[in-house]
Amino acid sequence: MVEQVQVVSGHPLLTRAVERILARLKSVSVRALPPAANETHALSHGIEPALFVLDACSLRTDIGPIAARCRANLPGSKFLALLPPETAVAEQTRLFYWGIDGFLELGRTWQAELPKAIERIVRGQLWVPREVLLAFVSHAQALLSTQLARGNFLTAREGQVLQLLLRRLTNKEISSALGISERTAKFHVSNILSKLQLDDRRSLFPDAAGFALLTPRRSAT
Image (cartoon, rainbow, N blue to C red; front, side):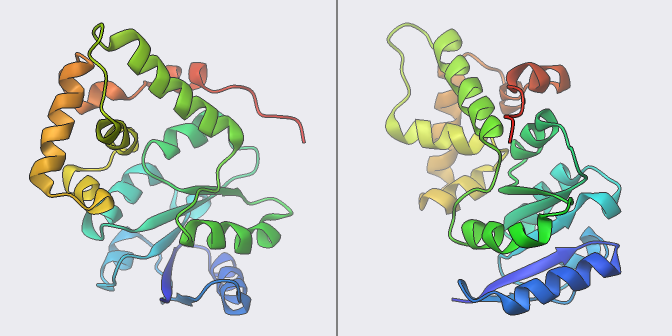
């Protein structure tokens, strides 16, 4: 199966660099779609689920909601964010909660790392710093340990749904990801919120200060 890659960037030089890398990629089958300068242009192509490469440097807006809207229009899509050098891990953690699957900082090594990141994400894996995953797991564990009523544990399926909820997937997207009906997904979400004693899914997410507290310092390299 050929994975379609949609670059969303207002920077022509970056777009051409990504297209050259995609053309040389042999480990997975990918096809570069016509580049898009913004979200509206990207969605106008009417494509199947794709890998979106979002250039946070040129888009000059919060790419988290962009990813959520693109995924709502094209369930099953994946997202790789190109970030400014030295982007804080707390910011990457915040974007991870928006459902972004990988991060590359536009430093000296980004072009060498891009093929590896694309290959990993196309195969359904993540390309994120270890600190981001630790923060995500820590938050999920904290939710379970502090808010679950005694003896009122999540089932294995509810645990899967919770992980997707924490990445802001809608009921429709959860149903698609897990191969269940949307009605069943809604039932699981309702049970999870009840067991966690939360009013709605928005209560699952930390605020900006919370992301900073959650995230450990970046490991030395």
